[in-house]
Image (cartoon, rainbow, N blue to C red; front, side):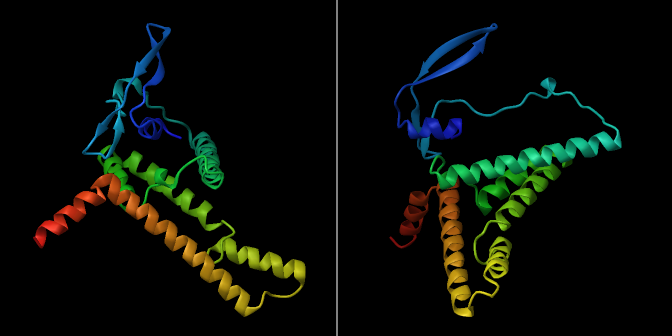
Length: 203
């Protein structure tokens, strides 16, 4: 679970943070407060980067390819870990981002430069590739599962059972898409605020 989510699920209870100050660890007790704009508990800390802390390195072609491959492996492992945490209920689906949040992140990445934007596109492509290989009917991974069954059983799965499996897979994917999109709307605009505005149109 990320820091922002840990703060939010505290529901205002005091939290202890350990920070490094003057090369010495320091424990700070912070009480989150509710932010009506973002619809969550916060502690006034935001993510920022200082360009002065970054150093640009140029690598030869072969070393660049090697480092690119290593980065791909790390991103794949990260994606698999998130999936594992979701299945084991260690992470909530609310940590996932749907089309609205992806659009926001893409815009921010584009503002920071072409390299950041291309990196984000590569990361999204890796995530889609991994998700597409999951053994869920209707995805490519589901087709691989059907072929594996056919190879073991020496006969294809009946058309009726295949159709039922694909319908279940479609239902699961659509349900997840709806939940993630609603979570995006709640995070960005607030579903309650939208309903209040719609209500105001007819009052």
